[in-house]
Length: 173
Image (cartoon, rainbow, N blue to C red; front, side, top):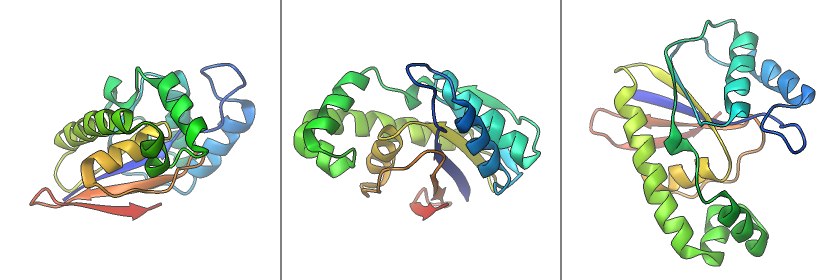
């Protein structure tokens, strides 16, 4: 069995790829309630995800485990995601799917595969942390499990457990 805890980054500074002072404090506070046994950490290429992990670990007291920047946790279609969510009036995957079905189909498949590849890097019986963005996390979960989850708020997360048969189960954090 393997577990990946997926979390959205903390509050970002206005017009910057960095956390706001409130976001740093928010992430450190959340970190105080996190497990301290991550075998590996994954972040998207965005600086705010790395800063969120740093504050999570600071709050939890865990040193930085092996880690990787994963391009597959980001999207080259960010503007299209924003437009589709705005048109849908929601960032919920089923709403965005109604506004731009081709976007969700392609991105969910790509993000789901990226999530499967992350599981391949988690040692058996261990837990990983992956910090990314909404609605990309939700699209990855949909791509992997075909389950639609509610949009994550800042620092909010969920877990995906992979059993020995490569069956996936979603949990809340």
